[in-house]
Length: 129
Image (cartoon, rainbow, N blue to C red):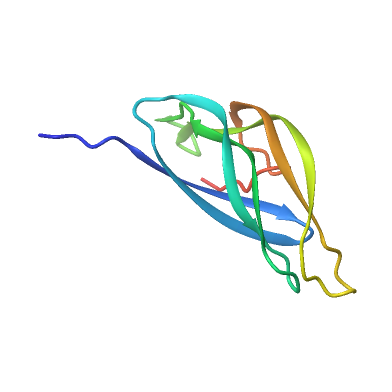
């Protein structure tokens, strides 16, 4: 039997000036475990403005997680960690084509260092388990 390398589809939601955007990056993992800073491109969008392609640094990787059954409610003990920012710099881009009543400024994080940690809603869209 031939095994294919694992592939990760990473969905990232960034929030800037009330704009939510979803970006998909697909990369072969080949056994890498942990977090790393990696170049990442996306299209920044805001209602009323034209989109702008931005290249920045983002967190990428996979972290050790586990679940085990326990005899008392909620009957499961979880340890779900995600690859997330441990240090970041806040960046600002100016979107083209905005009407006068819409600020052209778009704010986004640039990763300086990443680590495996419990998901924080301050800088990450966390899925409820």
